[in-house]
Length: 314
Image (cartoon, rainbow, N blue to C red; front, side, top):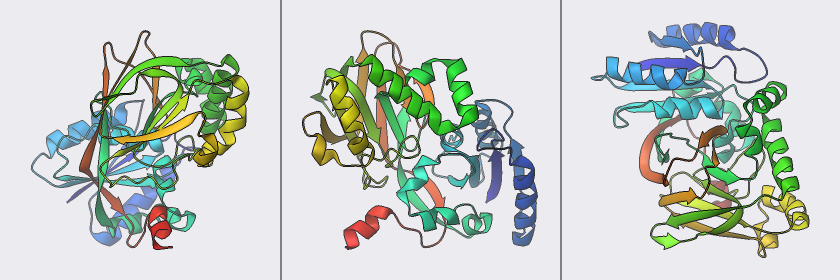
């Protein structure tokens, strides 16, 4: 097994690359591992380097360690060529790390230890393929995409605090009372209509603390899909807190849910998708969003379990 570490120095409140390099060298020395360490130099670097390493070591089993936030993890996964021989681990140094919200706070802390991951276990999760990009947690369109469209505003907000990009985007879109007519088909069923937001969840969290589907899980073979219908400005404002905290039973007048694996989405005008915090423009024609069951080999610390596992045990 070849161990490859990709560090995003822009993730989190400060550059942790120097500290992480020293920790990687020390921990790998203890385990007799000769690590390959790369520090991201620009957006997209993680995907390019992952692709290069997969090509260079095509006859070996690989484990990529994504050291950063949600976007870093998505870009690393997007560069993998052969999922049958490749594992991914997540070392959370970003501000949100939404995918790990599947676990309790106590279990999430275990992911920060390289020892825990090197000695970890591999679990097989479902994986999103959205027009060639592979976010692991969610894809959304609607609320919150205003900051993603404005590069300067997005950069300023991210520099202050990444969560601010979601909060400000949602506030702007609510004030605009924006909704879009989407032509959308899910597993052959037509859901076309005008919506304020649609979210396709593989995980359970977006934007750091927005968790409308708290018990969604990435190993059940289906998206958990939330539709926020076109409604009044007042209803959006009053419903947003319930939406963020998973109280969808209080939003039956404006929110409904569905499940599915294969989705096509289009609209009259081009629009922005939010994919694990990354802004991705819709493709000409239809953007295809698919869930690939049991595709991703994800390394977790020994013994951690989903929050939903505890819920089912109650």
